[in-house]
Amino acid sequence: MINVVKIGGEIIDNKKLLIYSLKNFSKLDGSKILVHGGGKIADIFSKKMGYNNNIINGRRITDKTTLDIVVMTYSGLLNKRIVSKLQSLGLNSIGFSGADGNIVKSYKRPIKDIDYGYVGNLNINSINTDLIKYMFKIGIIPVLSPITHDGNGNLLNTNADTIASYLSISLSKEYKVILSYFFNKIGVLNHLNDEKSYYSKIEENLFKKLKNKNIINKGMIPKLENAFYALKNGVYKVTISHPNYLNNPTKKTIICL
Ligand SMILES: Nc1ncnc2c1ncn2[C@@H]1O[C@H](COP(=O)(O)OP(=O)(O)O)[C@@H](O)[C@H]1O
Ligand SMILES: CC(=O)N[C@@H](CCC(=O)OP(=O)(O)O)C(=O)O
Image 1 (cartoon, rainbow, N blue to C red):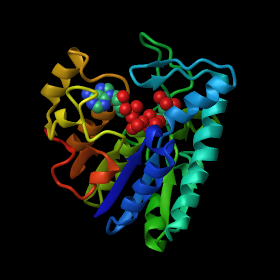
Image 2 (image 1 turned 120 degrees about the vertical axis):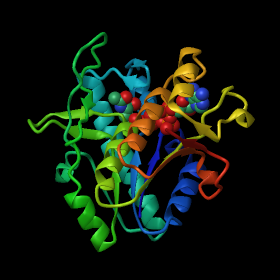
Image 3 (image 1 turned 90 degrees about the vertical axis):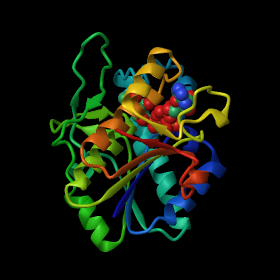
Image 4 (image 1 turned 90 degrees about the horizontal axis):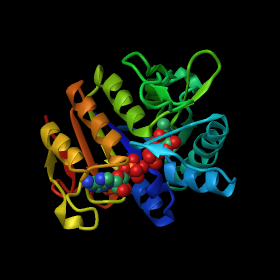
């Protein structure tokens, strides 16, 4: 059994929630891997540098300067901060970008209606699990940032939920994989300000309806698209939850086909 856990920017930006999430992550049995985002922190740094953030349907428009900012933020500051916190909990870990060890190779997202710039798309062969499996063997936890490479020396900014999904699918060929998306709400909500309105289960038809009604929007769109994709392609279980409820079987949204 392998646990793939993804944490997003809202968690990483909150010191208490980050350490709490990592503590709960540390309690998971067996081999595990942590994938992180950090969109909220990249927003803050961009603004500090006098740059505007432009995010459409949960994906960042990434020009050359934005790419530099996100590489520094995700693969530098945040990745190392998370590794140091895991070390403080006694979990030996190593941080990687997708370029390190050729773990995630992407291609530049083709321009359709929107030009997202230096954003990486993944395909079924994008993930190289060799190094990750070696890390499992020697008992070191890989911590993966959302920066990938195209094989021609270019870095690309890639949605962290997508990386977690494709990584889980690749590992599913050899292991039973549970993919947990941790974020700062209890699950997928019907009213954004009412935590009690969470869906304990969500199917694709319901997702489409809620998206059309704009009840699901922003970063929740790629998160759910990636969650369904993972479940359809061999991942054993996919959940979206608050890290407080990792071990509570009901307080979360379970993805269903
Ligand atoms: N129906 C919904 N239920 C919960 N969150 C939603 C919903 N619709 C939109 N969201 C937004 O999606 C965000 C989660 O997506 P994302 O920004 O990618 O999260 P993170 O990076 O923290 O994992 C939530 O913080 C919330 O603002
Ligand atoms: C292309 C794209 O949108 N990349 C994301 C990568 C970070 C991420 O996914 O962060 P969260 O998990 O915190 O949302 C971004 O730059 O926002």
